[in-house]
Image (cartoon, rainbow, N blue to C red; front, side, top):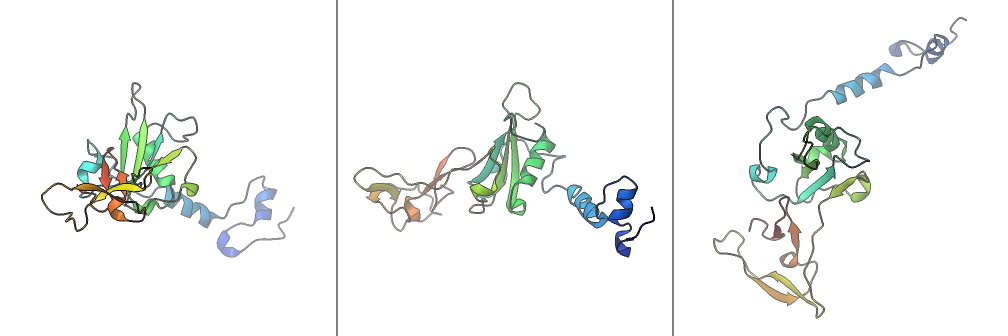
Amino acid sequence: MRCMNKGLWHLGISDEACENAGGKWFRTPCLTLKNTIDSRPSRFDLENPIDGTCQGSVNRLETAVVAASASDADFPFAATLNGCHEFCRSLPDYSQQIGMMTQGIESEDEQSDCTCIYQNDKLPSRESMPSYSKPSPPKFTLTNSDGMALGLRPNIACDADEDLTIETQIADANNPRQQFQVTLDGQVVSVRCPEK
C-alpha cells in the first residue's frame, strides 16, 4: 500500500507509514527529550557520598523530609543508592531538595530506608506524594486541658549563648514561640529558634 499521508517533514515519518510497517509511531523529539531528562546528572554526589547524617553537613537544622522504606512492597525502585536517587527524583519539587540520606541500603541485615531532604517549609503536599512515602511530621504545640501551652519566653534571643527558657503560656497555636518540630535525627526543636 502506498502511503497517503507522509506526515510533517520535521517528524521524519507519518503514523500511517509506521503502522503499515507493523510498528508503533512515536514523535522522536519527545523520545529525545525523555532520554535527555533520564540521563541528566544527579543533584547529589553518588560517587563520593558523605558518611554520617546529612544533618551534620548542612548549616542549619532541616525538618522537611520525605522518607520511604525500600523494603515496602509498593516501593518501585531497587534497594540501592541509585534506587534511592530515583525515588528522590520521582518526588514533586525535586529542585527544592538539598540532600539525600540512606540507611541500610544494599545490606541484608538492616531495614533499608531512603530519605530525601527538602529546604525547610518547602515540603510538597501529602496529596502529591506516593502512598508508600512518609513526610516529616508537621509543626506541633504542646497544650494541656486547661488551655496552657509550652513556649519560649518572650524576647528570647535565639543567637544568645545561654540555653532557651521554656514556660507555660496561654495556648496560641499560631504563635511560633509555641510551635515545635522534629528534626531529621529525631530532636525536638523550637520553630522560632531551631538551632537550639
